[in-house]
View (cartoon, rainbow, N blue to C red):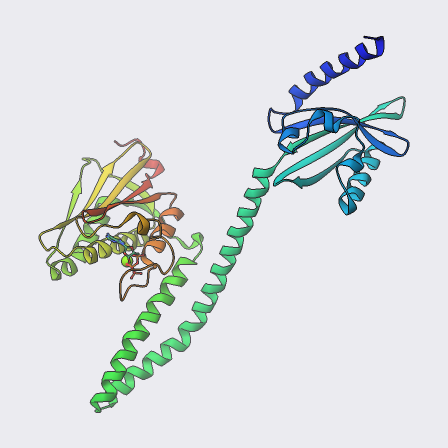
Length: 365
Ligand SMILES: Nc1ncnc2c1ncn2[C@@H]1O[C@H](COP(=O)(O)OP(=O)(O)OP(=O)(O)O)[C@@H](O)[C@H]1O
Ligand SMILES: [Mg+2]
């Protein structure tokens, strides 16, 4: 082994130390290059990410830039390498074989002369994917805004059509016309519900009217309000409060009432056996949050259907709009809570909601 070789071995092991300090394992690689005869030649490489890109040290070191890129990509890479060789730090993004990466080229200068350039390559595949997801979400929220705008525009003509239909119904003695009008009014009512729910779903979080709310009182209110409807179907509605102390959440009480009413409505609609009971329970789970459960012993939901419940317009009911659960989730998420559904086909369903306790009441058990 000659002296030069030793020196370059020494260099490589130094480079390894440098590499280990700078690039986390698996997530990147370090390389070096020099300019020779108007070509950029790689002189060193180290790091597992190189393998992921389908390269190895031996296929990289000693090879010119033109072995790795062609066409426009080669021109772009050549420009970046040239910029670094002229003494500037430069970063650029690329992607190969489905992996995205960010490369930074740093020139090493001795006596004002660039002697080599160190390149660090970081894998950013996940980051790029997440950025795409965020873009998708932004698109969705834009669609939501558009839908809310359209819904708002529909509401005004809808009000006059409904008004005139009611007027004609009052004035007309023709039974056939009255039957048609009744169908019209039922359908108009349905459009009205959809439009209102749609506008509500798209309503931004800032419109929430939040205050410290005793959830026990709120549940009693829902029981009182929904009991007549349950009784009509022969179903009993009851509450089960398993905490002695008052459980307070900082929430918009009207919105939480709306969520519980939707869930109880679903439970009533799923219960065909009048002997069964629907229970709203309140539990003190931990110091930060409380748990509300709505349990029925109704039809239950199959595994395939469970996945689709929160989709807009997903319904199995002839007169359902399929917006109820979506709206519930929207409200609960706006309150920084969670909503989950457990169900067994033929046995029943439990919807579990967690809500953060009010900050001022978190010490209560
Ligand atoms: N407690 C439940 N038991 C059985 N199935 C349920 C229950 N809750 C919801 N589902 C199923 O989930 C679907 C979606 O419910 P969601 O409340 O979103 O809409 P919907 O009740 O059909 O219509 P609406 O918009 O009028 O509420 C229902 O059509 C039903 O198939
Ligand atoms: Mg519903």
